[in-house]
Image (cartoon, rainbow, N blue to C red; front, side, top):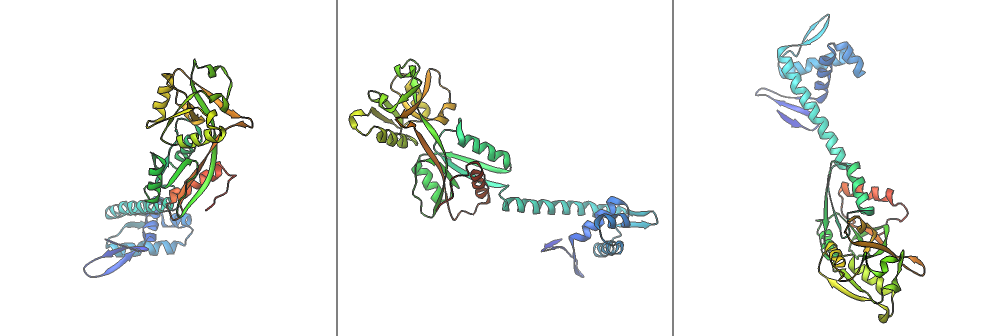
Length: 319
């Protein structure tokens, strides 16, 4: 049997004819209702139209599909085999159409997201959870890397979208501002600053700040420098090629203190406390943004961006 556009082709040594999906639908409906008249009523077609379609099907397959009587229509033994295959073909066709529409609407497929922040709490975690709930059929791949490697993955098409702090310059790229998070200082629970409800940037002057070389360490350092302009007012900064988790372990060892974003509070470490960092104008924050290529036509990406726009509607999409 050969499938062609709009029909199912039946090839035989002596002839080549086609069986339309309508032939199969009418025959299955007649079998379901046990009557050509009732099937025609349900399908809103004339009984003569349905009867003629079933007769055409019987002619094309070369067997009587139904035994007709005044009491209705009953499938023949050969007809039951034909109807069983007809149901399978119709079900597979419905799956084909549904799958194509899902891909078009971004309801299935794969989405690769790059980030360099914590997933233990915060808006990124909440956004990913909502996306999985809305589109459970989409395979969601998450990648945590340094910013430079994430940018390379986006340019190469390995990643569909990045969600990072700070700004990035991308050729042929788009960006959307998302949320912002409070900047916190993480301290050993017996640290003298732990007794304060709020810590000011100027309180850090004599401290040792441990930062990861992974993002958002760079943005946190830049923010610290902008808050404490004079080098004499700044704390000692140590940059380590370690993860945020190892940084916190060093803090518990009283090697120093560190700066984190509020989403990091979801990762619990015994012996640590978090305090909000402020200056004279109030709390300090870092903003997040989404970056993607404007030539990326992945429907799953469009669905994700639409969801982000609904969750964070104020900023507008820009080139």
